[in-house]
Length: 422
Image (cartoon, rainbow, N blue to C red):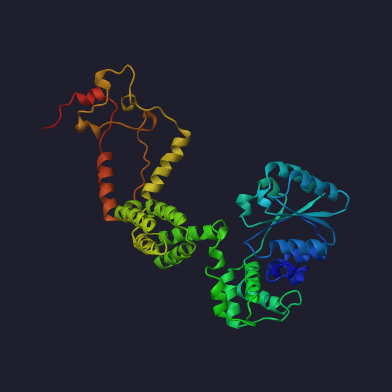
């Protein structure tokens, strides 16, 4: 049975790697390591299909040392123990681990001393951010090398190689230049994606693959297909930052990417957070309109949901911005985490042994603005952070300063001794 096209075309030498010249080109880290037979533990990180595993295997083969390949998800602790025992039989040994960020603590604890002493040199691959996803104990013992997304030109080189290679399609299929560029664009930096679809397209009776052929089998660009990949979350992050920066065109673009992936849940969550965090008190009506638009989007579903979503993204991006509410609550949260102060007795739900004169005056609204509410130790502390991004906030700030002029007190007996104004 013939192996998949992507597997048949996998390079076995660093010189045959497409792209990644910063690693495998002359002067690159791996090029120099190979020239000097320098073995080190490495974490390769980057998007799917950029060549992480291919680079690791080619490096191991050209180093001409014993190597073993495992997957962090499917390999058991016993598999790792056998790999370690194998490594001890050789002067130098490499362990290649796919999805290395999925190594659980037991497996890490097993590997660490052997990586430390050089019994095993780890070559790990991950699509995750290594500074977040990789355990510090593993990370500190490895060089971190970024494998970058392939450019459209790189993907076209790969397509040409697949069309002409004896291990590929061996010139049995041709392809228009525009079709190559379209497939390369849709691949989104993932050469494996391009190879897989090229293989599907080659099964048709057409001897020449056109742009229409590609459009008939690929409906959505690759970078929009997997909600779990980092590229997806980058789009979500870029949507909020574009709205925050009042770039409505960029915000619409990132919204469109997420809509093309039919990910209404992520869009809803991010737009609600954005509305309250970045627009907030500068335009409360826009925040309310956002909630209504999201409810409408849920009711109608895709594809029509893009209309209310586009409405609210334009509204939020072009609105004045204020982080006053978000920064104010965060300031209070930061303080409250470390300072659990006692609530004043008259603010408690059921104060114990309190005299009537010292109880909360439900029947005296004229006293409410004169009473102290913060605990005694922080009665002068301010958490609210002003902003004057809109006329509405200026009104709020004026009221805030008026209230600050009140000499608030916790002496309820003194306050109650004053008669209410007529």
